[in-house]
Length: 194
Image (cartoon, rainbow, N blue to C red):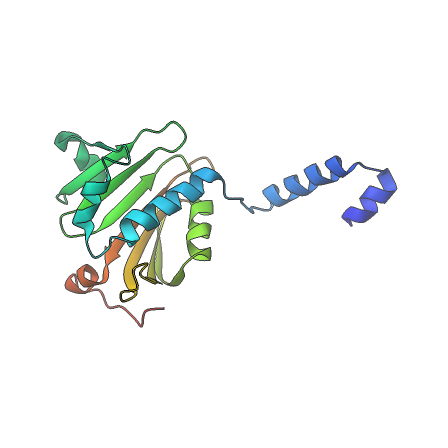
């Protein structure tokens, strides 16, 4: 059909490319940009790679230029859970990193496409979706994720809680990794890991 339009109207390649891109965009297919890729890489490198040693993250954050969130403000990101929070104020890549005292680790990125970041995570992970729940305009999904340890140790297992919005006008994603040991301690039944 596109080729017929090109021949019939003698459209330029640029015009065909623009129409194709608009068609893809209108059909809800998203392309990952550097911001979404950076957020996913940050989540993987900090939260998943350090899932069994979350205390080590605190030694990395100063080298990354992250700023500790003051105690009186971190409740906004941690709720009632005790823990620590840092913020990255980079102009092109803003996010909040949280670690609870129990060992869960999260990245909240309000300025990226949640749907695109989620698609990237699922494309690059061995995972099984365990649950999805709609809470108002938010969509919360839980995945059991398995990934190889980069140091050759046993595979890393984590539950990953993902919160996005189903409103087109609201971007952002919250990714939270819960270690297998904490999930079991909280009574979560986990099927076979993928």
